[in-house]
Image 1: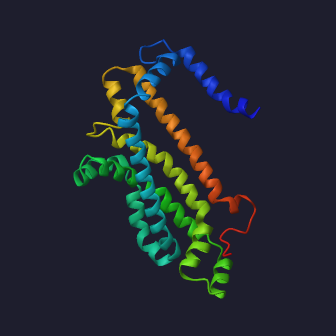
Image 2: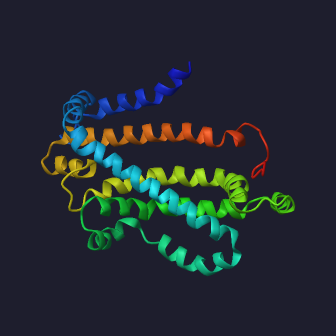
Image 3: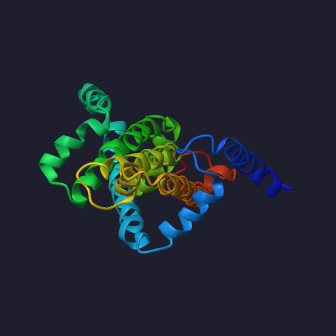
Length: 252
């Protein structure tokens, strides 16, 4: 029964797609796109375009996660530091990451470092801001308990601060994942010769419409797979939180 519920909406969407396809050259039917998908992506393009794109996405996402948490923890812990940095953070957060692509190209060139930095420039903000809010919301009673029992240094950071803020941090990481996929594609549309974004634009310019749609379909499947993988990681990381264990931020 659960499988029926999961497949009902995708089946309905495919049915609608089939019904409206063929009305224009730019909307091929699902069978044509499926055939193009198999021919295009089960080939050398998997190694030349898909895997390098995923690698850049994961590298930028991981770097953004580390930076976001590393910067967010001290900002969240210090009201003075937070007041000092807040105007600057709000200024940079308001700048759309795609606008930074030409600047990053000038500073880092057009190879892999540029693409990774573009992903970092957008993914870091949800992680950073959610980390700050998670640290700010830590239970003051538990903080006093840690001080009373002499829980300090790395032990306090690991057992109290990071654990207590972990639900918010995971929320930021979940938001950053979808942003990272978008920026992965955008970064590959600029002065690139490989990658999913480049290949989809190339198909569009060459009027290979079925192949273009197959690339869009692949991006959707990639996002779905990464989201499912993230849910598994989140379930393990937050098992103590969702399982009704000790209260948020337990120092035990």
